Length: 320
Image (cartoon, rainbow, N blue to C red):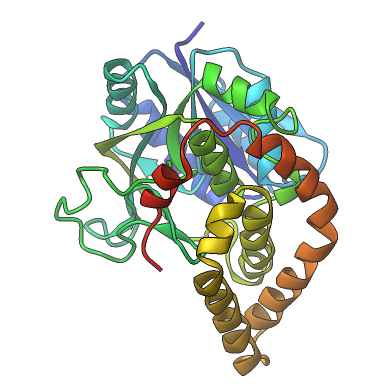
């Protein structure tokens, strides 16, 4: 059995998947296997994988069920010590996986290891040096659009790993799943911010994230999502994270900043109402309301797992 399984969800993404898999073939570290979760694709993904990548395990779901469920299916279908989650629209540098594993071995108390994502077409520019979370309730890609000169390499501001390219310790994932819905990723999120929710749950439980700045992946931005789809789910799931994960003390302490951020988003969306993405964002905000009963039930479970002081959580947040 391989020590690491790289789980790659894909939905009609063959045009990006081949370069992603070719980059994995070039990895220096070799003690890994790959599990493609084909989330109901209708392109020629299945045929191309059979022909060009026969060594790769493929888990085919009968219909598109969302990124969260696809990732859960891949994790559940494997038993390796570590699980790496990798977007299908990425290209990993040859040292990527080995660097993540070496950091995990050096920091056995870390539940996850984050690496860097840079832009696919501007390879010196960051997409994320880990994820941050703001006092205003808005998730952040640390360093986004900045030229990477090592300014984030200390990892001090990381709230959790960016979900598109990271390494998890399976034992930690199992404990986090058991404490919430029974699944690693909350499938009610469907896609977008499901990794933010997971990071919050890990933070509340007292888990530590390590950062490996030399583990670099290049990312096509929103190649298999984005646009109207992203606007709707980000609008909805940003509020879902607030309802489910943020402790009441912090909600009260930063209520003004949270309210201003949401009002600003609504105002900007109304101002650009003729644009589909703006209308989708408003629909997403409205769609958070029917989720509230289930989110509040999850909230009781998740908040009961908190093992760290509120002050420590507050110190980990980015200024509004």
